[in-house]
Length: 465
Image 1 (cartoon, rainbow, N blue to C red):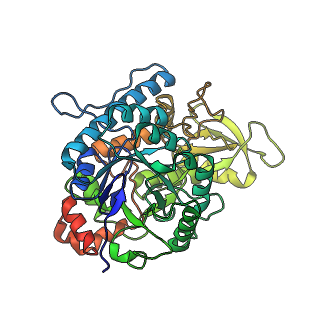
Image 2 (image 1 turned 45 degrees about the horizontal axis):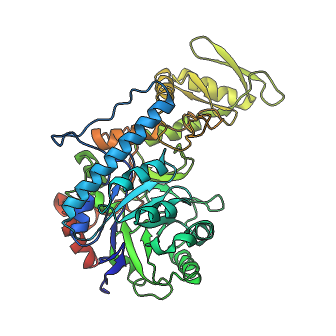
Image 3 (image 1 turned 30 degrees about the vertical axis):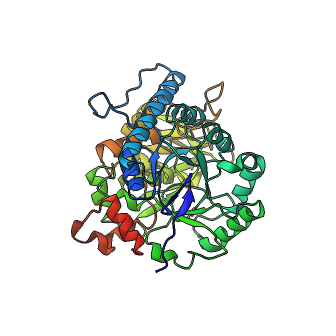
């Protein structure tokens, strides 16, 4: 296999191996510091990161604000505190080796304030910021202000072109690299555009070559592309290494670092990773962000699929097409549906899905009374973890709302990601993973239940494994 050469990343020559950020509590200062200590680029999640008391014990987050706006302010304060805690841990564990990056989602609630709040107090601890889930135009300005490098995540040359023309050309000296994330293979939120089909994946090489050509056209010939999404063994990418159509290249791994000794995820999550088969990851659109995302099929995700399938168009009064009256709920309320849907609705009600909840699309979904209570409570408890949320209709604007009806086909993403990270229920919570996760089951490195340290994983990767 071709030897991986060190690259100049965030002000230092390091191994071109980058730990993916992975959202809430799934990549921490401990894992990032270990990755950097092994000579690579460690990335801790700056998305509502964990923090600790004076004795080093994890502090569960409790919101006391009476309104969404008050809880949103608490969330921002907690997130800054958590990000600083993880940055300090990563710095200490790294021993001054490698580089430390922080990952944020542009569409997370209060992103700009959180980013500035952490970077203001973490000078010298964080060398770069990786950012996706949206079009982070102000990322360059903020990174340059604090003297750190920035790494936008894109899934097409077109997206990078828009970012460059509008903002990044003004702060090009701090553009450390461009992360290309394959929207069909990556875990978590994916950058599929409306013109791209979720069921017809495109090969990554032509798309990355287009990105490189776009970067070269604006003088970024020496700026690395960071390949992300679907990266498992470096030997899979040997034809890319040293290829002039791709140029300087680093690799970002998100799923594989989950199964290391330093990974902060619960043991139940690690164990589940080793049992998955091809097709066990679903590319779906239930996320309250409105983006496509990839997660492991489990009871949680299957219920969202089934909930969306128990859905019909309705009207409060009979129309020409919605003329069949049906009753639901304890009070026997009625709505009108298409005649061909009447039998389906009556069957759902008979099966216990007796509550109808309206969606923003002039439809209703049928759920159990227990599920209806949970959905309503989660919507009411919203703390504004996204800049705009389909599920609760929160938005961080003056009105505090998207102006649309809250969507019961989605879920509270903050709640479920905190739950799986800290309680480890891999069946009833959202479990993000990339589409290559099934390779844990057959990769010889993990034979007989072996879990490597970060350093052992990196050494294995450098040998092509």
